[in-house]
Image 1 (cartoon, rainbow, N blue to C red):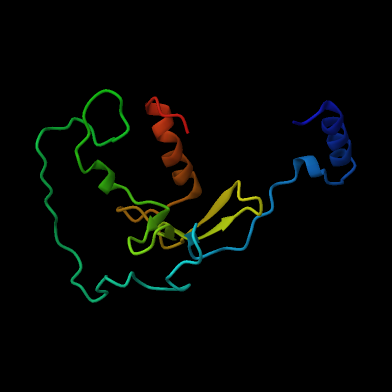
Image 2: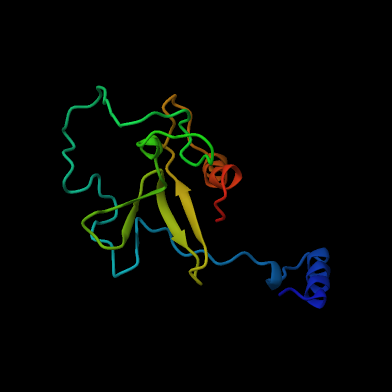
Length: 158
């Protein structure tokens, strides 16, 4: 907890042009190409595709998904109404798991991830190539909005 004494000392230090350790941001570790809870990630830095993916597969086309029932909203986090069964497939994620590993995740929208030294925080570095379907680049504000939207529309508390 931040005491009044530390707050006043920090304000004085900042007013004199110094720095205050009470307000220092957590130290960020080096950027990583993947996160693994158990050991090291199996895929090397700079890998271009998961081993089971054919990089020469045909691109484009359409996909048709079916489900029993109906929907009235594409937002899967709503409390009232019904989202389609595959609604979460419409969105991409910062990290994607590798089904061949027990606890590893590799960047998708992010191009790297940094973990704080105390392991209580994480920073995602967004891949400059990441974009929406209309070509607009994905920004940090978009990621923050996507993180906050489930909390604002539902009973979920993150």
